Image (cartoon, rainbow, N blue to C red):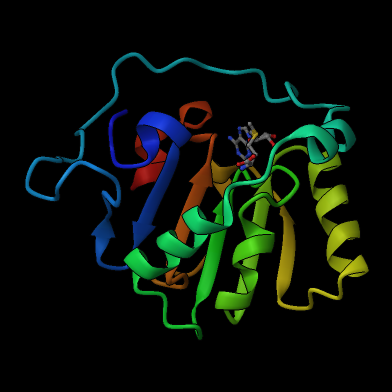
Length: 163
Ligand SMILES: C[S@@+](CC[C@H](N)C(=O)[O-])C[C@H]1O[C@@H](n2cnc3c(N)ncnc32)[C@H](O)[C@@H]1O
């Protein structure tokens, strides 16, 4: 996919106002793909046992990038954030102070366990770890102000996740 940050960071945004292209491609140039034909299926347990190492060795997103994301998305400071396929919270934790509530969602139990432990350690009371696949997550319509998928959109059923 070629939207915004996606080319380099594979960060995909969706706001209440629709899909966003926050990167170098201007809004006029970018169109939402109607479907993705070359979808690859990844094993659901691909990250089993990897959470501790992932948390330790995965480089964080630059603070300037998350600040830019918040600015471009017009985050109110009172909304809810959905971090889909959150890993160990590489977006959920740095973004959590800009939201009243954060759902950090991952299908891998080890990842969710690490998120829970980190949230407890830093008393991140507004951060809710959720064990679920992105595709089957239940949430009320228009519940979230912003949804992010960091470095994982290609792993999801993309049409479903984007809709
Ligand atoms: C490369 S990591 C990305 C983690 C984090 N978002 C980041 O930016 O570093 C991919 C994560 O996506 C999760 N994942 C893959 N497919 C998923 C799905 N269908 N639903 C929920 N989580 C999924 C994996 O368990 C793994 O934690």
